[in-house]
Each structure stands twice: as structure tokens, then as C-alpha cells.
Amino acid sequence: MTILSGTLLAVLLIAASPLAEGTSDTPVDVETAASPVLHNGREYIVPELAEDPFAIKPGPRPFMKRLAFSPAYGNLGDDEYYLFRLAFNPDSWLGWEASVGHSPGETVHALLNTINAIVRYPLPWRLQPYGSAGYGMIMVFPGEALNADPVTKNVISYGGGLEAYVRNDVAIRFEMRGTTVFGGESDQGTVAYRYQEATVGFAFYRELK
Image (cartoon, rainbow, N blue to C red; front, side, top):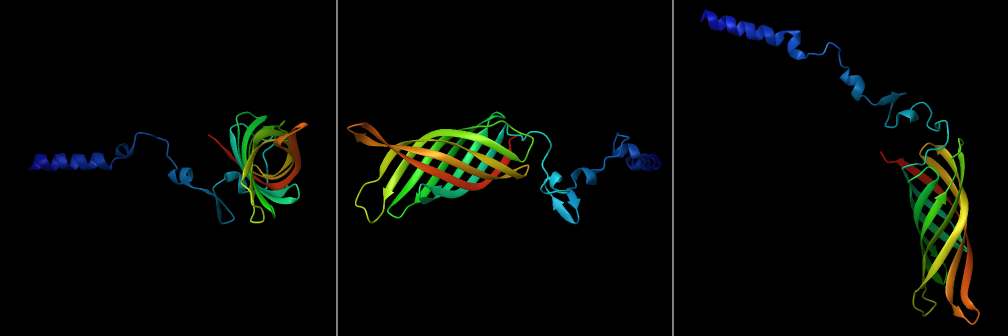
């Protein structure tokens, strides 16, 4: 009985000793490592927004391996134009962008889909100009006033724009493009219709890890 009591006492002393809690001599501040960034009573998921929500990092704007989603509104010719774009930048100077636009005209509706190349030279400023060119298809749907079938035509678009960065991941985007629609054949060859496209919108950037 005495031997059992002594053994039990020895086990309890070992369990209560500091060596049983861990072998590291350096304390780990778990609370600090897991705590979010707090500033003026607010919790910030993006740490750099805590001090100045409109600050941008110094140096050229980073574009490599970033996704961008850009809703926009403007005009295609004389009609309203609603546009959604999704881009991926495999390089700092080159991006590939898919766009879907809808123009609800009075007599016809047009749906314009294009694949575009975005070329730019990153600058260490908030204003970032770029050039763009692409190819796509336009589908025209006649309204109730016209008794006709929908038609699909080839499209080439080209132009440029300017992004004004509000912060590192958000920019206001302005763009001007020329859109050429290749119509039917005539005695003089292929008929081409040219439209001016002007839009303004936002660009939301996300970095791929």
C-alpha cells in the first residue's frame, strides 16, 4: 500500500511539473497570432486598410496573376449598353479578358460577346492606361416591331481605357472602343458596320496565391 501511494505521488508530481506542458522554452502568444487587426474598435480582414482605406502600395501596380471582375455601363452607338468583364493577367503587362454586353435598343436587342487582349505598362501611380483589342460575336434579336429571325455576326473591337485606383484592389475604369460588325455580302464585298462603344465602371482585383 505504501509503495502504491508513493508511485501515485510521483506520477502526480511529474504531471504537474513544467516539463509536462511542453519542451519549448519560448512562450507562444496564441492570442496575438490568431487575433485580427483591430483599429478604432473595428475589425479589418485586410490589415493595410486599418490605417488608411484609400492607400495604395508604392511602386508599379501589381497585375501578374490577378483576377479582375468589371461591371460597366455606357453606350453602344446610340443605345444603352450594360457590360460584364472577367480578366486574368498571366503577366504584368498582358491580360486576357472575356466580356458579355447587352444593348436593349428600341427595335432590336444586341448581345455582344468578345475575347480581348489587354496590354499595359504598369506605372507607379493611381492612373493606369491600357490598350485593348479582341474578336467576338454579336447576336441581334429583333423586337416585337420587326418580324425577323435573330442573326449572328462576327465582330472585331479595339480601343483603350484608363483605370483610376481607389485602393490596391479597386479601380474606376473608363474605356472607349471601336466595334466593327461584319454584315452580309453585297456587290462591293462584305458590308461592315462601325459603332462607338463608351463605358464607365469598376474593376475589382483579386490576387491568386
